[in-house]
Image 1 (cartoon, helix red, strand yellow):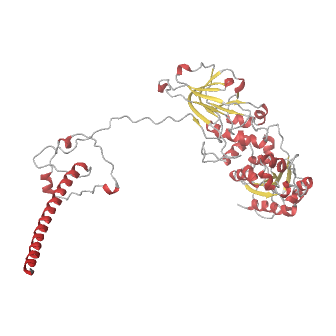
Image 2 (cartoon, rainbow, N blue to C red):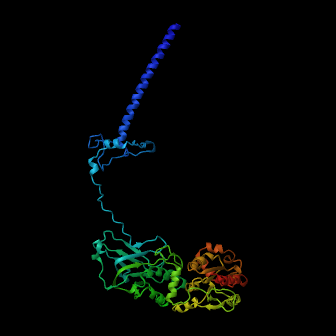
Image 3 (cartoon, rainbow, N blue to C red):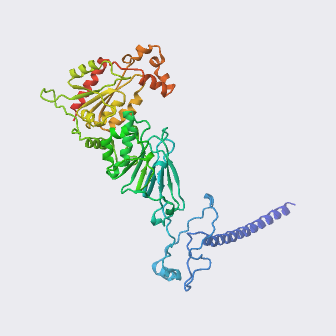
Length: 507
């Protein structure tokens, strides 16, 4: 029984070894077959696989796709990407023997005969969203029917006199987009030149359409809302543009006539009363404010600045001084620097102006009181401001005269009590620095405000200005702009005067 068991085990071991050998052989052939199959499939499907033609054959293998033939490709996942196939470099002689020219080698390069698509036409009107004002810049035949508040754009001749996709915009031609009391102007592209209204008058220069009114009548808004935005749009024409004005204000035209005549050499058109169709070789419809009472050189139209604008004003009014006095020392033989204090007759009046004058004179200034007129040409007062080296006053429209100061002069703004620093900075502080003036802000304290006398210390406007700001702009304007005057604490304010003097000593 033991011998039989031993033979059985021996026979089983021998059979297992034979089967194992056969299995290895079959596995080897299976792997080899799989390799050739996959290699052939990869040579057909992989775009970067290299296929050689056999020596003596002038045509590529039928498996090679024709030039330009497109194959559908399955999406390739990261795990399915085919490996890159590298060709071994053959010796030069052997390479020449194996590579043969094909008919494709003699074909000229295939040229793309498709026409380049024309660039998209830039819209005539630049629409800036819910707050910034919209402006249209139009080249070519423009026809304006003033009393209808209509501007039509005729398709150019080079476009065959037609426009297959005409557009239309409604533009409020004022620097504040949601200003009540002004009418929108319709700017409309015509589908065909044949639809254009006949010209009653032809102008040799483009038109600039804008609206007066709005917040004008306040000296600061006269410049911030109209004059500076108008300058930005008109200056490029160097006077060769005609102003077409909606809601024209005769007092504004009179007060600023010298500036307007410098911007345009042509008669101003009263748009609302003009019932003729006027034809222009182009137009700008609307004006845009960069920021309050200032210019941002980076915004369209680019390249302008507040020093450029103030230089333009000095040239317009023939103002002689481009720079303030420069103090060299404490000698008595030099001219005293001049300080102008802007007077106010209504709220935010400087109550102790005589004391402020005496303090400024002690510091070394020659002091004058500036009382800007309202409804007259600004040129005469501009000359008085230009003679000053320092301009000082409580926050208000009179400080707009800072545009006539020589570049580098000192500008002192007394900011009223009531957390008004941000308003003072936006309205005058930032613009002063943009004009390259040396700006000083002085914030009045609670004891320098007459609100303590009129309302009492327990009133929220005195005790808690932040609560007034939370209640809305109406209350802020009522208390801090409309109901207080300022009595400066000279112990606090005199160092500001000395600082202004020191700034004039800087190179």
